[in-house]
Image 1 (spheres, one colour):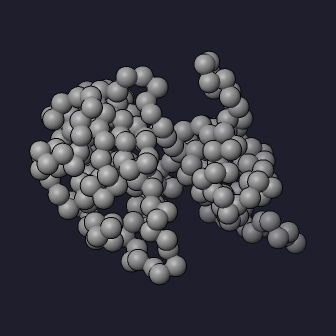
Image 2 (cartoon, rainbow, N blue to C red; image 1 turned 120 degrees about the vertical axis):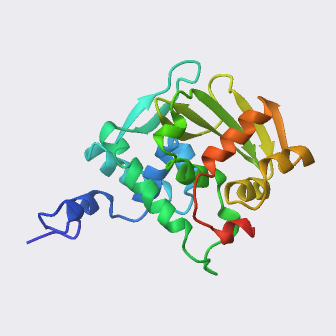
Image 3 (tube, helix red, strand yellow; image 1 turned 180 degrees about the vertical axis):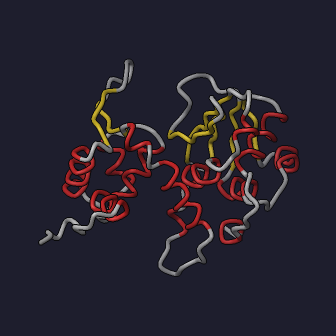
Length: 229
């Protein structure tokens, strides 16, 4: 006999869904893939979830050793939620699922105003092959529309993180959301965007800008729904 909270099957996928299958759980993990977050940060990003359900989901994830509570070092010193080592193991499968979703056709039920470029960067930057990242140790800080996020490259990995870089970045750029999407999905060339002023380079060189977008747009799949925004 099983309860409503478990599939009751001796199957790795079923066991994974016992932990992750409740509504909103994947999206909480998605936010934490971008770095530690305060409860308020999660509540603001997922307003339809509501504080009570958010608390319940976080408790379940803590019990499953997917999420833990921590405190950021000074000067921040605030309580946050972050992924455990087991939680980090979800990075590749969840980002792969997100990339699969990039290719889905548009739906009238989806509000395009909810587009977040940090989540797109999280998805597309994850597939960069280690050979392209070999020997690179760089940080790119991007101000896109009203969003700010940074991309860290180190140890053959490229990861997108929320907010500004905690240290001085090697590259800092400013652009509109539409410009960013066209650069990522092939609607325009980096050199043209810099020359026209659509991309403003606050820190770094033109060479770094080209490398950053070459890495982040390292995909052969076309996503016209984003290019057309």
